[in-house]
Image 1 (cartoon, rainbow, N blue to C red):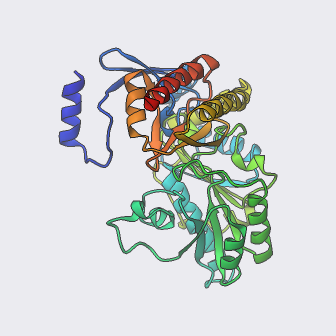
Image 2 (image 1 turned 120 degrees about the vertical axis):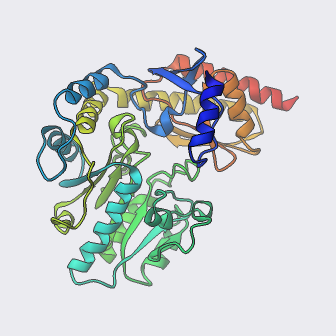
Length: 398
């Protein structure tokens, strides 16, 4: 069965992914099963998406119930699930209003557009450029790959769109030199760089960025597509740093695996998005928003975000113990259950060996193992992976 599916997929699907030769057929909690019935403990969670784990019963029930009532009517009309989800997100964040779409890239597109239009409508047409960070990742549409600070993402798509300037992440001086030399509409950054290598800022960096934006009248956009929805041990990563952005983008875990994105902002910014200024046919459709609202309720009411912080601290501590014993490990970093282990060697072979031993992990930037399990993960699953990694690193010494 698996070889047949892999053969068909390779024949009919564009080869935009380097896929691992396994066909997953079922998931429950932190466990995946392939088409041959073999079980794997999942430390990727659909790339920080399935925060409640696979096939969560309450989300499945909400999805099925809404599917029997109303699938879609378009955003020309009001719907109950979309309205209730918007209310929940606004009441639990800094924002006053939001725009729904289908993905993180679309959410970032909305953020880029609203930042430009804000200044255009206010008489500052010259303020259209955005500062983003080196090693950032914001998506693969033409605007969002242009905003991304990684050349490999842009390869083959030149010329990219103008209007983006880049500075090193976590470098206050470099940002100030850039922001004071020209009129920018926004600074766009991830509170923790995910695809860039799980790179965390110093404690005061984001506060300094907020202050610079205040002093120059520049909008601050936080891309929380990977860090949001509990991943760092708080509902949103910005809540760790004692500041608020002007605009925030969400996606990934927002509906625990269903396609949804959101751009949240404050009232005075939102007002420039009037009728006809932006749209999304499937943005916030009833079935998806019903599942998303249930996802958020479960996260908050069942203390899953608390578990994320507790297990994240435990996991990171144990990974640091491995680092103290194996020279091949250069660094362990992260917050909550967004954790990266930087190696002095390429990590692809370790990912493969873990898969062979029944653990799903992934590698970014060639040498950084990224661990983003479901937020329901427990010590048993973590300890099992740690034992697997211990065995692998011990073997590398031989």
